[in-house]
Length: 185
Length: 210
Image (cartoon, rainbow over all chains, first blue to last red; front, side, top):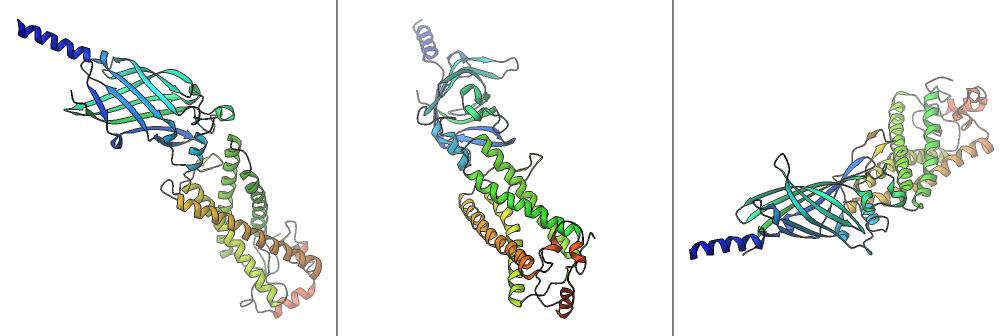
């Protein structure tokens, strides 16, 4: 009886403690994106970001991603373009140094894949965003791949004349690849 | 007007190369300076794209022109002092060098800066580098600028020489390169003919506007 009670308590405790928490190996992780510039694809990434990841495929109700991005760490391998991104027409590093994404709910799509609904805040614009999530776990290690498509105009990235999508396309594909290690406990 | 050059006149193909390139190059000189002063905006990027497209056009035309030179004779030179012939030859070499290197250095600068490249938006032109290369970009950028000044000096000497022949020497150097008709050839004064025959064609430098 005592054992059963302990077991129930223990499992209840685990559940309330939530999914497994993971720490991110920054060197092996990447927050990348691609867009079009003069109708040609270009790639970029944010080199500095913090990802707080709680995830257990067995219990999606407790999963949570909370990602803070240092927008000044953006790099698109083009000096002039990166210079423009700091300006007030784009990210406005001085005024809005961080972008933030936090999930609100995870669900299994009809095809079995996992989707995460959340809110992305860039500059002072917050919009609902859904990620396609692929989580591969092996013991204490895991990889997390998340993809979504954003419209830069939803977040005022490229305002004024820069709304012109013939130069910079509206669609931005975001791909995050995180290399994770389970936190002890 | 003959299509090919004759012994005394420039053919229409050579004249077309000369004047189309002249117009494009002069236009690019102004456009190149103007665009760098524009504020950072989509309009600036469009003007840069135009500059790049015209530059690639010039490169293609110059390569075709050099190819055509191999198959076309050159009119014999008009009489002039030896130093002028040497100077003209030097200026021609400089002009051809700049016409080739200016677009190439621009293309390299664009590649090393990791900018896209298209010909009037119609097709993609490949990069000369494997992505961004800041050191190469700096070298290509400075080269592009220095070549501009070389071009300016060569252009002034070339056009100044042509005007000097026309207004001071009153020979047909400029007239025979003018785009219209063959009148220049027909009205070539006899002394030019005589002197041409007295000049060894093979060894002397050319003073022809090409």
